[in-house]
Image (cartoon, one colour):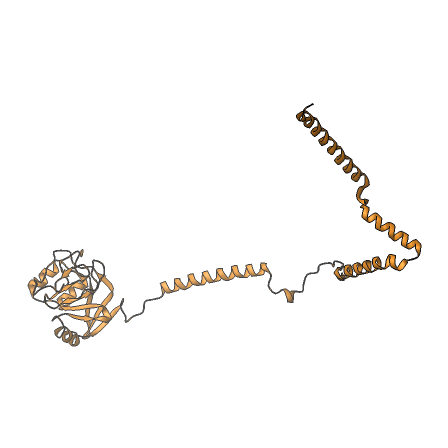
Length: 292
């Protein structure tokens, strides 16, 4: 028989025998259960039992007893201290707190807030109605404003700068301009103007509101051209507020002027629209270069 044949037979036999031995060992250990002791442990137990039977109790149990005491003391130290548990309190029946401690309930708060908001709204509305119906104060812009006596107004017109015959009265927000009273000029004015504005022209005055009728800029006086020239968009007006050029839709708006007992009043409560484009009752042309 060759060596290869021997090895081919011997190796499977050895593997099978090893498997049988391992199976028997595991089976034996499973049969012993959790209480299985090793051979060395059983030998020591037999020596201790023999010593006890011979009367050598100190030698047999001294080391074992000390070890148990040490283990017990260590276990007691590691054990947490007992926690005192209070006896559970029995539930009590709920009783509403006294009204003095409660204060304001949620329902009361909401009711009072609603009433307060409604009262505030009604009060504000009533105040607005009263302010709307209350008569306007007199003596300021928006009413009949006294600008001075005839003598003081004529003196202001004569001494005006930078252009002569241009006088500004801030309390009326107006330029008070002299208007020619010759018959040809008044006849031309009667064809365009009417009412209190025409009456003031016949008395020699015209009150021009400072606002440009285009977009409301204040229109200053140009000393060189002797015209009103708006710096915002270039609208230009002659000395009595009649439009000469620019984007404005009409001439300068004006107020009525009245003379009462030697005093000059300007009624700023009523605005009369300026004359239409192309109106020229005075024939005043450009007297110098424009300012802007």
